[in-house]
Length: 537
Image 1 (cartoon, rainbow, N blue to C red):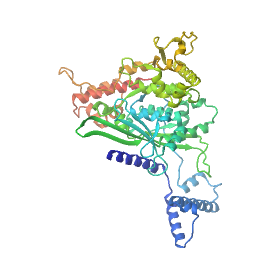
Image 2 (tube, helix red, strand yellow):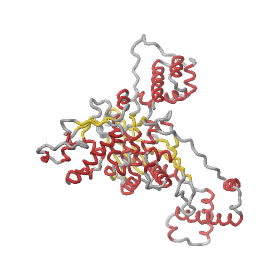
Image 3 (cartoon, helix red, strand yellow):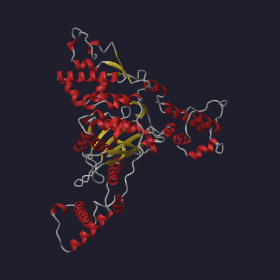
Image 4 (cartoon, rainbow, N blue to C red):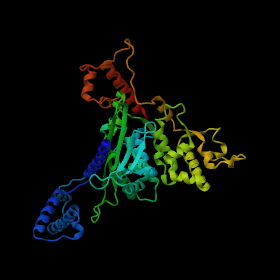
């Protein structure tokens, strides 16, 4: 019970912090409003009933009136039409907004985190049926670990007031608004995140018009560029409101106690700069010319994306590979294909150590990606079942066109059941429903090359083997420097990978600071890892 109260407080505090960081107020106007209210109140003046209900409403009313009064006074005194721009900016104390340095275009193949928090954050954007009501009457997307139900990841959505968490109905309205496009945007965020030297301290900016191309919106001709940018800004804003709670039990219980970690943090910390003409009536840029999205991960990455922690056995990180062409799949026409591709991408690292890592049952995949209501409808109605089967076949065909390999199990997936097949149905096939035939069918789905080869080389985060032989040569700082330079790895990148400063690494390479064999081997392994990353297309 104590842990539950503590987690509830953590979630509310995180929501409050998000709200405070997103609000901007004018101190001068607020102070003027307080003085004005005090003087009028002393004289017994009454304010309209609709703004007397809460002090924030009263404050908003007064600051708006004061801002309007100040604008009218300025217009009477100053001819802004003929005033040079330099004088106007000096008068208002503003300067031209600097354009942030943005990330380069994603390659065709990107490393991506596949650990529980990220998988759950992505899935929460399109599995509306898995959102539930929490004991606190908050909307929550809960995903317990299959192998250990005491471990779980939960997603909440922060509201507009301090410490407010949205109720289920309001949370679902947000999820319906952002949908699976928010899942695609998270894949973009995560891919750029792992391109940073140190993901735990990363902060990077993305150009909206480039993101539009990355997620395939440049083919969405029914919307103008401004409308696409405005929609992208909205999705980014709502992703910044998502909170994550991770409960992870470590080790075995000791008596009546168990070591558990409960952390609550934003999923992503997002700031969106919208460039364009502001509507003076609404105060918003309604037709943006460009947007810039500045992103950093929430503190959850300290435990889940920390490579150094992984080597020490204190981080639960997993990394897979994303074929970025799946980002261009249009969810409006090919939603099942997109959800299937995302799920298989997230699953590939987890299953990499299985005997048959790419073998699946159709039913298990559909249960993982499709809404429960649609599956139930397909079981009851043969026409709904036919529609689901057609969507499934189209999804497989689309994945094949994107380079995925799909192979059918002859024993359980008969030829007449496969996509684009004209084989005759056998006698007696009507003894079972078409959905039952499909549900038990097995197939192998491999991601595009060279992803299978990359996954096979590293089925777990890097774990260094201990030194077992005294005759094994001892690595020196000079050896480290020679290997690093030979493989084109910078001092800065290697130091950040190791969680050290550049000055520390410089001292090691010059022989002015001694390190043990274990640290030396870790640096050696780090050089190989960074060199492989540099060699990727």
